[in-house]
Length: 509
Image 1 (tube, helix red, strand yellow):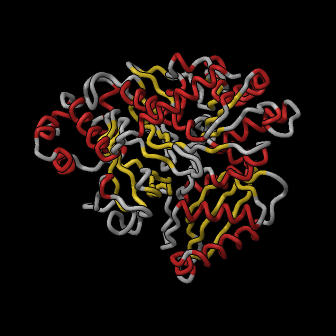
Image 2 (cartoon, rainbow, N blue to C red; image 1 turned 90 degrees about the vertical axis):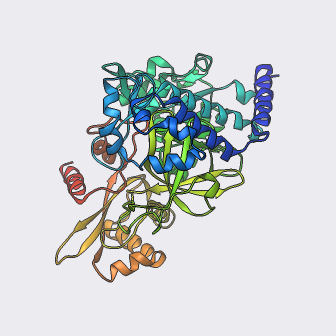
């Protein structure tokens, strides 16, 4: 009998039961906003926007929305965050001990996002909430005695003045609670190895000594790790070495395009519990069986606002309107796509994070990530969202048997004022179909399924071009100035200049 596992399971079931008693997400949201304003009222930013007065008003929420403008990264960093690199009490009490370097999916250089002690505590709180929700999946007692393997960026954080810098996955891995260390793998020694290949090799060497029940990490990098373990030990599937593996928590990118590849390396069914962990915070997680949708973390350090991702909030180029419609949690609708705005315990205020989400269940406060505001290709009116792009990838997998692991896309100008969509597809597996065949399949699929694309094809969009490259070459280009693994994500939509540089790199190989 798994006595410890039985005790843990019963404890989690009781904690899950208590956490759901009288839960009111909108009440939690109002409390979070007041807590943030109260805690930050004596900072430079809090004094500038007079947080004391906002708290004393008859309607703190409306006063907050009137007083503070919407912001983006450039606004927050240039005006407030960069001062926090040198001075305390700028946007949150004290010095932020960390700055997270984001993966920069929407632009050039990685961004630097403050990570406060309050944010680390909030991330731990959401992590515990997700752990607690595992009790809803009716796991066997033995599962609760197994270990968790989290594939993060390396945890050698760079010391810069009064703070350290690194990717958010590395920061959280470097701050795991002491009670978790006994079940956390690969452990601090391996996690500190900066070289990706060396780190994966050490994980593969140690794999037989571990009893992994949970995997965590971005799908593309986790797949590479699992395949190396399988190759090194001559396995058929990863379950040959970890028979108790039952849960995978992806994050960072959509899981659906990777589903088929994971089914190849898994020897049996694995529960997928999605997560929404960004450099700015841990916002949502899968909390119940039968869905990949995620419960919004309404009571753990973040106040959310939502801008409809349509003509009420954005123009045709996906640029935010000067006076957009803005909703709070009590005003949202199921099925509507929203751009997410966050105010957090890291000193982030009314910040347009760049992600779009859709509410799938108001009853359960559940969302799914639908894309990025800047992962939106509309140079000639084709209006391709990330969701449409992912549909194309799934079509290629099903109809062309092309296993696409990563992709990037750009609108590139051709002759006579005509444009074309240039795709670079990083594939895995056997020799793929001809590039012309794949280009025609994408063009036909979008023309049939997407009215705006079909209209663009009759005007300024000349067609589709495709460059097929092995996934490893795709990653080689991506890793030129960034570490592999962790929270490193592929830029889906890039400029035509970046695309030409990408293609030139491929031509040299």
